Amino acid sequence: MHPFEDLAAAMTRRHFLAGSGLSLGSAALASLLGSQAHAGGSPRPSGGLPGLPHFAPKAKRAIYLHMNGGPSQIDLFDYKPKMNDWFDKDLPESVRKGQRLTTMTSGQSRFPIAPSKYKFARHGKAGTWVSELLPWTARIVDEIALVKTVWTEAINHDPAVTYICTGNQLPGRPSLGSWLSYGLGSLNENLPAFVVMTPSWSSKVDAQALYNRLWGSGCLPTQYQGVALRAKGDPVLFLSNPGGVDAQARRRVLDAVSRLNHHEFETLADPETQARIAQYEMAFRMQTSVPELTDISNEPRHILELYGPDVHRPGSFARSCLLARRLAERNVRFTQIFHRGWDQHGNMAGDLPAQCKDVDQATYALIVDLRQRGLLDDTLVIWGGEFGRTIYCQGKLTRDNYGRDHHPKCFPIWMAGGGIKPGIVHGETDDFSYNVVSNPVHIHDVNATILHCLGIDHRRLSVKFQGLDLRLTGVEEHHPVKAILA
Image 1 (cartoon, rainbow, N blue to C red):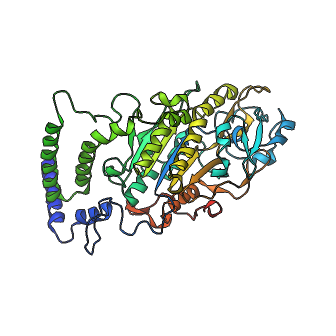
Image 2: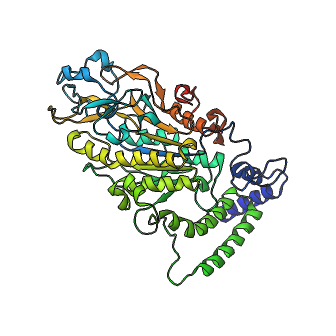
Image 3: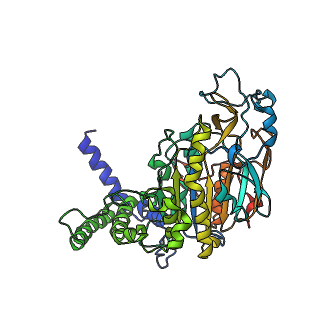
């Protein structure tokens, strides 16, 4: 068929679907936007799907602090004093059990044990072990539930972070924030429901790349993707009007574009057209709301001091945490902060302390700030990476320095706030921090727990795509971690 004939045929099919009583586009739009029940009723301004939340949520919003690269559990939360006697001895095969290795260490002639060089101490009512590298986090252990036994099948960075963010190692699926935005809608008409920040990091390692598909909407309409806040220039790309264009002129342009888009939707009934209309309008409102959000000049001095000196530096983790609190105040549904550089294949003694210094005080401040404002009770905070690190050394081993490879079989994540039981430690690993001894928690279980805190049954939140019912937590049996739920 000639290309023009093919286009004409496609247009004819679209007109048929749009004009028929079985308009697929209109049905999909009603389902996706969740603004009306099929039986009628008034629109819901916040969007979301009918019937959600499935039950009363403990949390209205969530903040996810992702330590991209894989923090070393052995040097931070998983205290293994017996390893001191194993210094430079080979990891027993009975522990490794033939498990998969990365190509970065699979060629090593031996796998020598590298005990942590850092001191640990018990903190809080539960006596939670925390490394000296996290003195500020140690102060809030009574607020958090530490899960030491999270595991994943992915052993390399990109599949692993894609997996934990979207529920699949292959790109193209909706991210956690997109699922929440799609299912629950927005609580603020002037800001996106899903905001992302990618602050700077202090270690000198080359950090893994972050792709916007990690906060993308996948097969969901694009209005549900995350909006990235930048540290320099416009907080959001193209937010400012071009030179010579004032707000009134921009409004006239948007009105004209909106009329064209509405005409296109009436003609073709393509749900993505409605997504474009909503995005144009949101962008116009953000021209006022985003500058107000990012202006911290009115924050009290004691609050700025709480977050530490880095809060004055745009693009720092501390500034991002303060903005996350401001977003929570404004009822933004989901905020995700990706802090890169947690990939210590060597120079653990130099790079890991720098990474911890970036995030430690700011993380503490975020929890304290939310609590003192009455927001922690209905805000879920998550801290963690995509996998852990090996007990054996990668590269040269000394008492004072060492490196660690990727380890997917056990690593820690902690949660605090809405829906979470505070001051507990869940799960245990073996003496080598290599295998789970009790209470394994798959990353799908982690995401099921996050959804549960926000009132969602993970098994009932899905979207049809390519003949499948896709959901964040996959098709196998997974459950929220009941032991850490309040």
